[in-house]
Length: 181
Image (cartoon, rainbow, N blue to C red; front, side, top):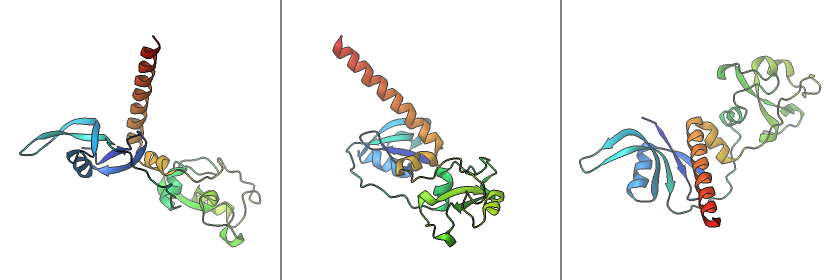
């Protein structure tokens, strides 16, 4: 059974991942509708329900812009667990978070100054800037959106959301074509 359910806003924008239990509560209280489910069933003495995979809130929830904290896990997730200096995927246990401009040189602990680096590259760079160490970044660091990190944290949920967006686009295209015919 899937442990996480993708929750979409009424506008189909991904909001979060919740437990199956929380998703069922939202469905039972009619605060959400079921968009995609597994073949497995949840059974109670009163009813049977398929295990939800994707649900959509009935009413739009307006959320303020969420600032994503620059944690080790979030930086590595943004960088796809790839060293931003050599481009290798050494495995999570061999990755570190590096300050592009070292803190000893006034570099801040913020998204635009943090990258994932393998142990070898981090030691080679040390307290130098990438230019001084003759190293180049694979990609310039940036602050990811909350939605992007939600989808990156669960590739299966991201695939489901992408599939639903394709279906929604096809339905919209079909209804547009029927209106002009």
